[in-house]
Length: 136
Image (cartoon, rainbow, N blue to C red):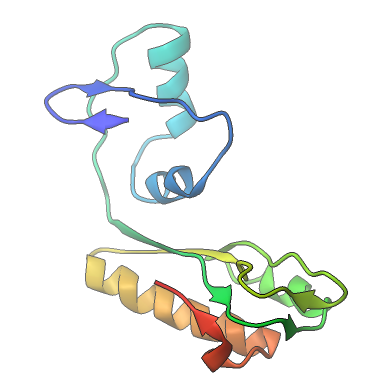
C-alpha cells in the first residue's frame, strides 16, 4: 500500500507477512477494512494516520540450539512475540528463525529499545545462548 497524496495498492499478498504485522501496529485503522473498501468495493479510502513506529525482528540461531518445548507456552505470553520457533527434535535448527517479534513506540528509538528488551527476554526464557543468535 502506498500512502502519499492519495492511497493506492500496488500489491496484495495472499498471506499475512511481517509487513502486515508492522503496518497493523502503526496505523489507526483496520487494514482488512481498507483492503475490502479499496479492492472489493472499489471505494476510495482516506489517508490513514500513523500513530507510532514499529520495529520488526526475526532473530536466527547460528547453530543448532536445544530448548524445551514447554517454554513455548511461556513465550506465547509475551505480546510482542508473534510466532514461536519451530522445533525439530527439541531443537531450533541452524539458520532457522527463533521467532517473529514486533515492538511499537511513539518514536523509532522507543520501538528499537522495546524490541531489544523483548528479544533478550524471549532468548533468556528459552535458555538460548545470546552468542548463538543473530538479529537485525
